[in-house]
Image 1 (cartoon, chains in turn yellow, brown):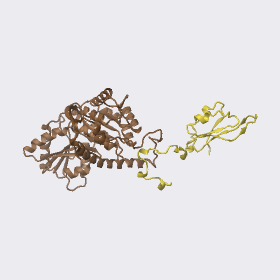
Image 2: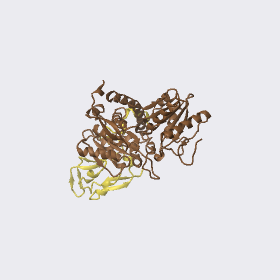
Image 3: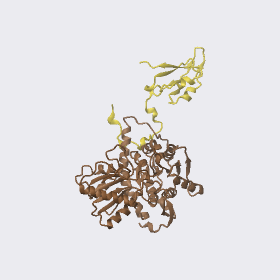
Image 4: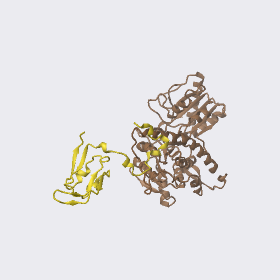
Length: 107
Length: 405
């Protein structure tokens, strides 16, 4: 790969310390996933528990209004960042209305 | 520059363990985490006393094992504290995993080791098996020979460890019991501020700080790991220069310095005996007496064990016809099983003018070594020199049932 672009020993901080915080955004871990959580927008009650529990900050609140078939209106929706979701399934487990399906990744 | 004239000294009767504790107090160490193990225990007992008396403002963390002791010390160091621990024998073995973590994280921790034999069978007595097992853990390792030197070297150790181009943990080792529990007069400055002035705390380093978040203890995958290990290789090389420099500087301020390789009576010496730790005193006495009787013998003491001062060994000891390296540890199964003897041979490798090198093991499990033993070894070395056939394996001196003619 692009090995020549990696820093030399004297360009790295000592002790493998990561000096800049919040850099996990740069590292894509989505390809670790075996099962993919998929939000069922019809069932979702927007309680945000998945957003709270996600250890990878992969849930984001997006300003996408949604109207269910029964006519219930939501001002926002939840979206999963599949570049960072490792497929741990915590959201699936925690969702109180079983609105997140866990689908096997099949290519 | 002669500040030493201004220093007022207290002359105290201290064991080497207590001398270490006094140095820790005078260095204003912030965190101490340790677990009791013979013959180290009185180091931390004394430090506890200092804390209880209000003489030292430090956090003493009582832990459930040596593994936790060094872990807590590393954690404290990562938070920016000047941290200290002490151990021996089985305790050092239990720390082994964290030894590598301390150096890999580049934590300037200092630890004193009152060396002791390893189980089994159980022995609480001295040899250097524990220290030699920690050889490859990337710790700067100094071996001292007196209580005064222990005090002085703990002070030097923090200065070496915390210097920006080193940032490695430092071990200061000495003979368990033979030194740890024997009392000597030790000069301690009446006003310890001179010690802190000499070795000020280095807060200007990477550390855990809520205002400046950083990640310590990361994973390094195959395309990253190697570079961090190479950083340690370079840091060790820097530590060699730093150890010499700090010792010289210490000499200028306090009026005592030791070098990294102490020598005696090397002029025209045919046989030179190299050893380490408190045993050197016995060797010196024997060799000075032999000198009086006209025997051309010299002595040397290795003070810096890691990084190994190969150049100094070659330069200082290369003039002898035979070099006898006396170890107090066995590397089982090796052709030459004295750990220091191996390094010395390595230092002379490929040198056509190299002296003959003989490896001798003594004092295992604190088997008594007297000046008579030294004389026997030196006599044997001269006989070997005459015969011209140097043994290609280690001699286990003093073990019952084995005789060397």
